[in-house]
Length: 206
Image 1 (spheres, rainbow, N blue to C red):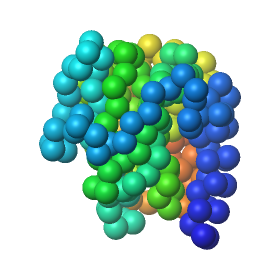
Image 2 (cartoon, helix red, strand yellow):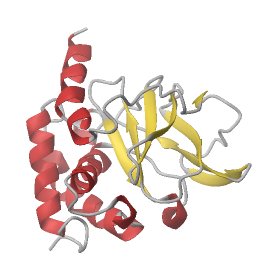
Image 3 (cartoon, rainbow, N blue to C red):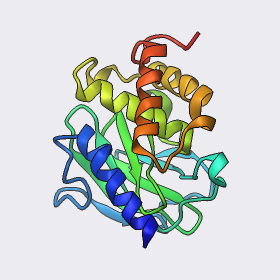
């Protein structure tokens, strides 16, 4: 129960604050919901396909390596369109931490996994990167950096290209081992530094 309390506080301090439009993210009435144990899964760790004209997002969520690196199984997740701030999909990871989602969004999105001891999230640009990606502590820091940049209007959602996302993640990888993911302040400090090192993803870190 203590971990749930930490997570709830973290949700309020970080993602909810970063997404004023998405503060109610979760089960949006317009967002389709599916379990990741559905027949959408292909068995690969990360991959992409097109189903009924929609992009299939597929990958796994893991805790940061210095927190054990375990899969975040049976956890709620949501997919957020960063151009509109709308939740476009909600679901559950399977027992192996695998998420699957069908979305029409082709620009920048954030996948946010809750239910573990702390949030695990990541950025994707399906049109440029495909829909397959695993998430961990590195992608979570980069995700907060990118979302903050969009939320503060430093960049637009459409500017979170595959290249920008990669640059944010390169910088986050340099910092992740020193971050206390139980501390919202620690993650926020790292995300802010990632923004500075990359000029909001415009260039790779030095």
